[in-house]
Amino acid sequence: MQGGDDEDKEKTEKDLKNKVLENFKKDHFRKMTLKEEREDGFLNKMTRKLTIAAYLRCIYAAIEYAPTEVLRQNAVNNIKEPQMFRAITQLCDSADWDENAYIGAKYLRVMRHAIKLPFD
Image: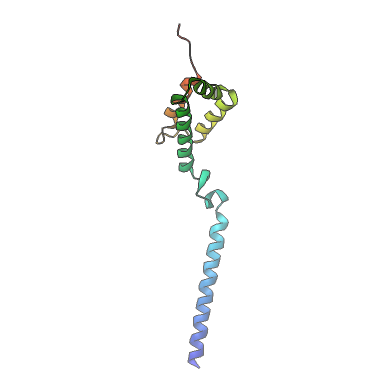
């Protein structure tokens, strides 16, 4: 008879462990928002900052190393457009002008082509 009691006791302990684990998982994931659950892509702040920094490097390369002057002027004119200028600025601002990714420096390096002040 004791063998049956041991089996029941093991089954009860196993059921209890499964129930506790299940409740833990429910409580844990219920408290997390979708942003907290996903740590990849643009919800991950560091990935976002590095992606924006890479985007600024690409724009800079399109301007500085354009194969022809026509393509260079086309790239400059594109970033001079108010919507593009605003979008690039908002992107950099959304990354808090991160110092580790040098977003501010990259932004200024790109925008110096768009903002030309006349010398008097």
